Figure (tube, rainbow, N blue to C red):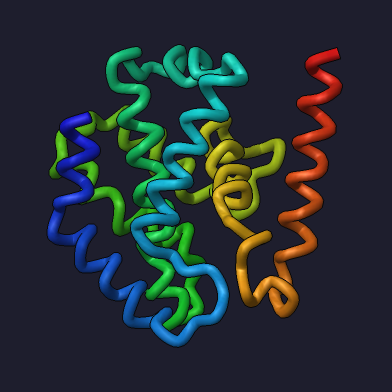
Length: 179
């Protein structure tokens, strides 16, 4: 996971995390900090591993030894442009893919791996049937990684009910799969 460590220590990555923190210092709701991004990366990897779909990403041209790093790169980088959305209104997923490219290139990811992660970053807000497997997975992991049940602002959060519905649906799906 040397390339993932290189992302975490990359000066632009650190700068973007700090810009997110500055814009969100008074935010009552979920923050887009390192912990959130790391959680999304971990949950994405677990979803793909547990579902047996990790091979579908590998078959897209990413070697088995690097697939975990690509998933983690996408998760760690998916919200790096929240500060741009706060400042300009530009979709942070699109801006994030733009900001992530030089970081991935500077940390040793090849063009194919970079393209896979950048597409997922662009798609992570909506997921949906037209999105890539990694994009849909990031979207789901983004929701599942939030500790909504423990949040003091949950009753005022517009996403709380949506997150709880996702968790209920996932639990039902898992029960059906066990049967």
